[in-house]
Image (cartoon, rainbow, N blue to C red; front, top):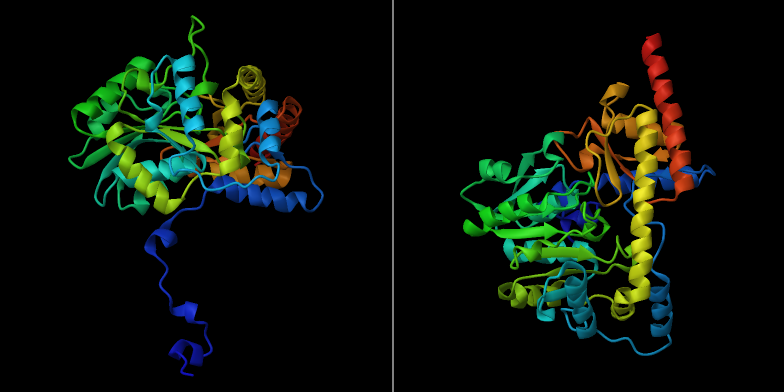
Length: 413
């Protein structure tokens, strides 16, 4: 039998294969890279405090776990429709009415394999080669990779503490290009935990809509945002832009990270396109996870999730107080999610080296700004307070000792 020249030369055939450029140029997700280092350290018998991952420590609500046990009773679990099972789509639509006062047609709800899949579908449906997508710097890193994978260009807009590390209408208008196709927004944001004021978000959406661009709004942390001064829960962007594309997830508010279940709400004109893409990319989200997730919207599950939201507020207070005590400033206090964006430039270390040394010397895992930003890549780190109060206090005490050691070294040099 004939062999290829590569095989005859003693090299595997794959050695001459050409890896797709999108795979070669996709940057790693550094939060996960630091997680692997943390796993390696713990394998040596050391305890690492994890501030690097946005993973609530609660798990799914008790009623949802019970529902999953009921579903996993040996029954056949077949594929579901590509857009998700009807009952779950109706439950999600009902949640928007009950929580946000917005009527959503269940036909516009798409259930996905995590919010990452929702983002992938939304980008695939709206971004062509040469399309410009405007987004804030800092922002969630995977968004940039998705856009570039489909041949789009990221128009990254530097934000500062003065705008709470968020876009506003003026910044968007200044950054606008002739090829702008989409504006991408997250409120509250990962990594900063900050939200855009409703009036400002409405103004940004109005600008983009008037210029014929899609508005893609990440609301993954919306239900973990603080109520306003009158105790009113934050509103979905759909309350003032009903044709925005909204991304959401069961991972954060409902604590179901490993279940890999999310959703998006899309304008009617996109439903057919999204369905075709979902059929080809994923077939459908997990059938048992979808069936159990209907219980997320029961009164007992929602009450448990609200108790957790309040707990996150208490954890935030601990983190902010301890960071102030140990001299690591937070230039903008978060009002949602479970992240703080911390300026470490005063330690004399760049963000990457700070994270490397904090992990290996203090056994505290943190995510460097390089994951999220260009402008603040070397000055800031993200700390997640999704872990328990005891772990927070332990990790912050370790960070305090680590920071004191850095200061002592600097004074001595």
